[in-house]
Length: 571
Image 1 (cartoon, rainbow, N blue to C red):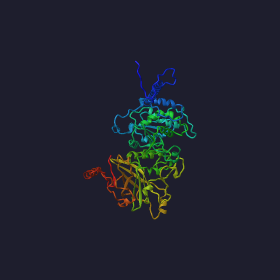
Image 2: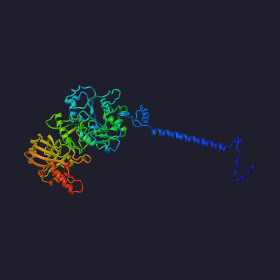
Image 3: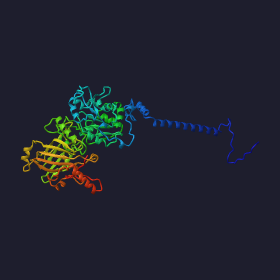
């Protein structure tokens, strides 16, 4: 059957294509385009699958390839370093953070760096603050030392001693430093690889460091230990901070590293320090590796590197309004209390520290405006009595009684507020240094004895008719009450009130300021100087009755107002 097809004149009829028509190929072109499109789709799917496999593959595979790429490269790896095996990992918490046990000393692991030839002397410093049976950690030395008898008091009062691994395989090219910096930089990794169950923080200090463990726990409890955290403080020396870094924690004052950060560093430390052969010591190498992980320094003002020499009075008498955590280089400064050896003064220092850790070295300022006297109390250290009214802004600056670690003596060498010492003997304060401290129930009592001044005769002659402050007072007793548990979160300088003076003894009450108290000279002038606050710290029963009365009348939680004008909080 023949079919007739009618077409429009403007649209040509389709022509049957054959091999003789070379320019007639629309159907073949469509087949080729379809094949090309299919190939492109397949290639796209394959590329997408490969990309997804890399993104969502196990960490070990990705880190393996990253390690292969970076093993021969002088540059930091583009991805996180390899982690230790599963046997050393702490399982993640199964519930919210607040369901975990609160942070305690059992969750801290210490790595104490030292040397074999100095350890017989410096171990006495460690004994002052180490709590055997409660604290965990090791002392890392460069060589073996004789061990004390196993059951002796010396052996029981010290952490176990270990010898660091050989570091001869690592490069060290700094012309002025010492290769021991490599060994000390690896203490964190060696400590971590020992495997410490329930560890949350790793703390690095030196063997000539004095540490306040209780305050360290209080401060670290602010942080989330399940995240990477790098906690510490820089140096007091501007030159040291400029040479190393203003964002680096100095290990002498102490460095606290959370478990996840310690885990990451343990896996990359040996590879990382090979990239920094020209660095000087251990702290800068550790900081360089932490910088590769992108973790910044969380500064806490209670860590003290103490890169100073000479008389440390100016620093101790003007401690920051923050919990005291550590001091370093205790052999490079004069004895902290007059008339004692270095070790003897540190024993008195740590005894006061243990009596009430949170308020230790905290400042308080009060005035006797009638006699124009200024009292500056540094709990556990000294009381300064100035013969004039000195405002708090000036007293908050550290009196420069010391020199820098590089033995320079100008104020530009320090990265904190300082002031010059008084040249006139008529302006210099009378000093009362701590003699003993006791704790009774909820109150601490410190006894401060008047120091024998060299310029007493000059003061009597050149400052006439004004006599030195408190000529008939030989002792000052300071009563202190414990601070609230949250004081360190929003700290404030303490307040003090002058009490009665009797038989050559003056009493001062120190504690947290009441909400309306300012501690200024103007406020003190409205009170009866040296006679206000005769009652002293209130007995616990009176405090309890006072709280009950306030609970009945106040709609909000009460603050126990101390008769001396500051807040009294019971722990």
